[in-house]
Image (cartoon, rainbow, N blue to C red; front, side, top):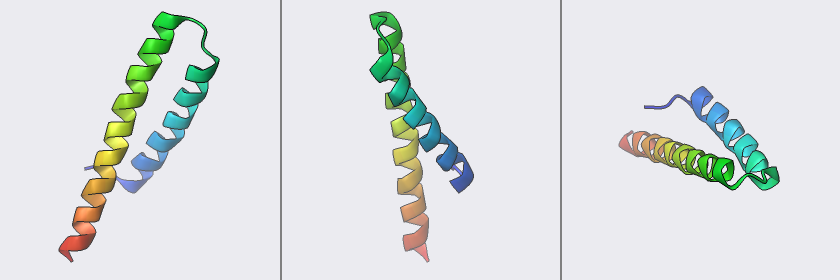
Length: 58
């Protein structure tokens, strides 16, 4: 389970990765950044689902 503080950091890092992706000219590096973006988006999305589930349990 991801804590709220961790999720905030992940969102911040995701924003930085998106910025790097937009300005990156190296296609190989750009693909690596894109993969990191997808992974981080999944973590954030799953953490929001966990939080929703906990709220609904009470």
